[in-house]
Length: 209
Length: 209
Image (cartoon, chains in turn green, orange):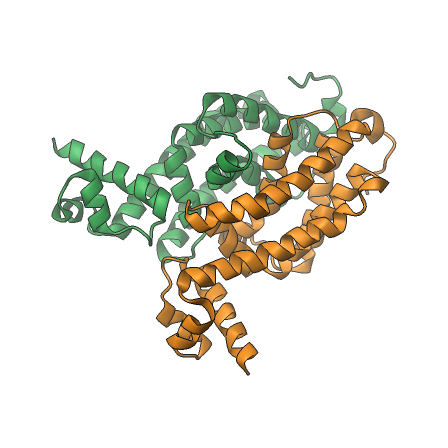
């Protein structure tokens, strides 16, 4: 019963933060949608910021674990490992597309919470990307390149559909929450890995698929 | 004098929307920073939403004109034209990085204003991208491909640094408002155009620079 009301609060918060933004949502709105009273929210999360922190943390805990899971494959090759990271993250975002939209949007506003999230999770993410790219350079799988600029591009490709879901739906008629999108878009990012990231020498023989 | 106070209001609004988000900013905050009284803001923009609309419109009017300017080159080739579009948009975003951040973030929240902006400017943008890609396919410059998926990638690459400026600064130590970044990142997107977009046949002879 208690677990249920906590989940209901989180789901209501994600839904409202997604539609109206964090600042555009009140505790009262969340309580109403979750069918709880505001005291229950205060009991679990202190206040609205506590709820946002909870969203950030639960998103990034799983996000990082998806990267770590894929990183175990590093000794079989950097390219294969990176493709697995991308597949895992895309799937994770697709399954939690509302939460991803909320997190990515609110991360763009400078605040104490955001700085803390960056100094833990974003640095961890960077650490893994950096390791994969460095291994890829070392093993001649990737052409030597500025790692931060590669991270910008990779993250740009990964985040775009979930930062701009309305645009995708309304303008491009693409639905980033659907498995069809996930599969097709994964191929696009893999194509980017093959074409712009991979070293010429290695790339020539490998099929693109 | 009047022009000055209008500009001061717009600049204050962009700065505060950028730091605190649209919903996290009050008319009183804007009035204080712009050193005007709230009635002056009401006189020019009616209310906060009017100010946001003004930001959207002034951003996209220039944004679209940058695309149109580059599109005049289409008869000299689709790839060259696309590269010019990218260079123009990157330069424009770099010069107006606070405004770009505000616009991109607020565009991710579904609202009446956002839907209106999308049905005018985003459709216009899509029209030009579509034309350039179609010409590129027709002239065998680009490999045939799903246009919406190309637009997602291109816009993802273009918008990423301006939707995530704090991340770039705090985690990657990259400053997307600097001309150095603009030049280096332009090369990256051109590389994407050459490598993932261009047809193999044509690409082989052209130097990447």
